[in-house]
Image 1 (cartoon, rainbow, N blue to C red):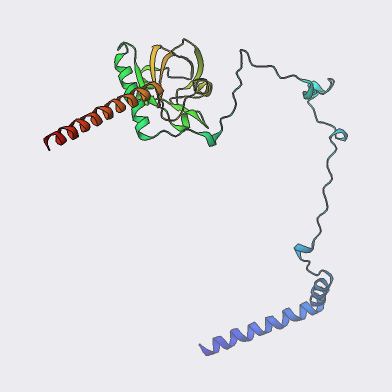
Image 2: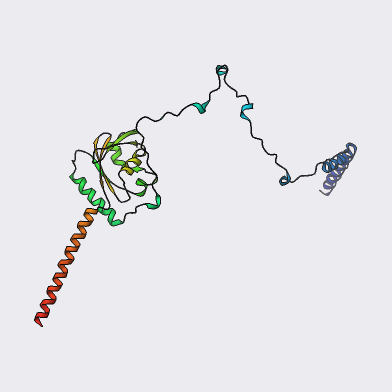
Length: 253
């Protein structure tokens, strides 16, 4: 075992010496040193970037198909933009700082009144109540409808749906069947009717693609005045009752 290791080491030493002599004969060591001294490493941070010159488009020939080679290049700047058909209304963007945030009492008030109105509608027309949130009346103006109602009564594909308010004014809206909601046109309806957070809206499907819409405000001034009057009448009765009690007690004394 020891003799085999010695033989291996001897063979290895002989090969190293032979390789060293060959490298000296070919001058490989001198060539490696010359390459190291002639090409010093440069730091990438010190490399200067050449400024890019803007490309002059007029001096570059545009490659075109052989079918249009004999025709003048089109000038897209001269093509006018055709207006969309129909009357286009312009709405100012709402100030998000002036948002109306309904309290829980006001929100519940509108929902209760909407449910009362819903119960008085004809049962042969499908209907539902939709309370308004900030996302419905400001910012995104996206109105998601009840999924089960949409699958049962509304078209299975995207369709234009007409909203008819209580004054018989019609508003066209875009219904997205996959997302079960109203997108385009709902913003205009919401802003025209000044819907705010907390309002409740009753939708009555009078035709396959037409809703009759009833709006219940979260804050109704007339109802508020009536409630205030009732409270004042009650307080007056209580005060008169207290006065009568005090006068009777004085008489007994």
